Image 1 (cartoon, rainbow, N blue to C red):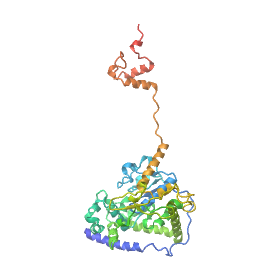
Image 2 (cartoon, rainbow, N blue to C red):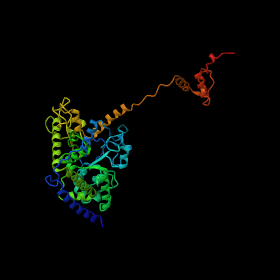
Image 3 (tube, rainbow, N blue to C red):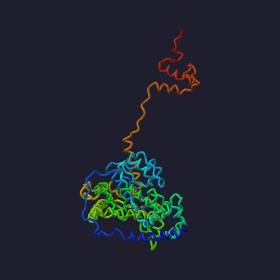
Image 4 (cartoon, rainbow, N blue to C red):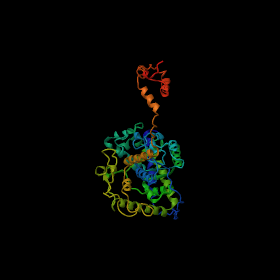
Length: 465
């Protein structure tokens, strides 16, 4: 079968898959949800977490709440070596060698990496729970194309940076062996450690790969149902409501987004068929878990989450809602998000002036634990971009590491060692002192021994017979 025929076949399959996806799971009024709301068994918060941070999936928002949880509970977060930047030397498969030694042993890992099960098991505690997040492939690929347009050669060579042109002939532009090719084809599969270029027609590979992901990951979140996913995450980890509060991070301006016209979503899913199958499977899996909780239970917890989040946000922003700003308009440089290129605008937030705490009142309802107002530092980290927060965490964890493992100064040398060093500083061919015999390297140990015993004397001190 020619490449064109294979592509058309995948396109047809993807169109059917897309229709099924659009039909599914959005109707909260369906009667198949149980009406009981089972309460999780009380237990200590789970603190060993490996979050696989996938690309362009709202994963930066999840990472931020994990960073804040780690700081509140004095947990160590594995962070990359400086040579790896703020990712674990991505796109290379993860290795424990990429972890900064001052962030070992960790309780949490949440920075970008390419999944490597054996290396993560070496790094993390035995009771670690694995979590990741996926996004609908059409929306995700549009974001990838926009964000990495100036990095991936597969995107850069497309005339006028046209997404339509790329999707019309993806094999014309795609270069599987270039450095950033993973952004141009089956990115989710690649991040999870799979082969992004494996033929999608090989269903055995897809079934096996999905089974492996399902075996490892206790929860696969879905970006389109972020709050519902947080309900499951909170229950999985036995966390409090305040532990999963967030604001959205790393967002683009509307002008940086590309409207997907008719037919483009199906073409994207055909080109990223492995990702499409992965997403459809775990989207259905998520809703089976929500179904087991019951619609009333999930809807109630989502409402609680959103009320607590809105209260927190208003506490940080003096009673109002945060205004998204271009990076150039954000006064605090620690809050300016990284800009991938001049063609993409990533927006962030700026905090209003404050005297250390913001609006008075307990935020988040019962158990928030921030009486008398929201601390400025809490609000700052709530909206802090990934790069700056990673740098801040590395600094604080390095200080803690040095306090726990101080570098001990060597003990002062004994006096005889000082004398010996004085003698060793003299040229051996000239003798240690005028009138003393010249010492060879072979006779040096005996001479030093005699110095220590007082047996090597200046000629003027020798007794004459």
